[in-house]
Amino acid sequence: QVQLVESGGGLVQAGGSLRLSCVASGSIFSDNVMGWYRQAPGKQRELVATINYYHGTTHADSVKGRFTISRDNARNMMNLQMNSLKPEDTAVYYCKLFQRGVDYWGKGTLVTVSS
Image (cartoon, rainbow, N blue to C red):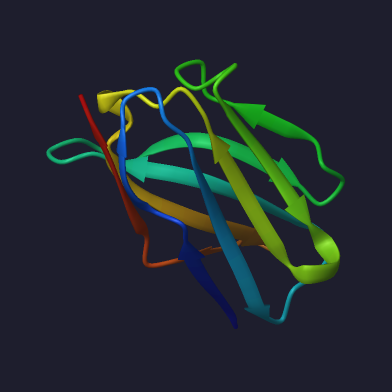
């Protein structure tokens, strides 16, 4: 089993920055992919960014140039640096780890961007 705990959410003004973190614990293998997803009120959950064990990354077009995903394998930690935040970035942000055919999810952290 894998447990994921997110932190770092909060209220920020448009143009500001936040850094989200996700710590994984349990049976972690090196063939995993981690990612950040978000779900805004009344909308479907969407992919924000992913990073594999070897630090290969993808970012959604809506966040390219503003958000940066990273990870520290030794600490089983993943981060999301969010800059130039916009009101439309307001959502609950979820951490996900995929390994050996199974998705594991955190409970989410709320990010609110005021205009």
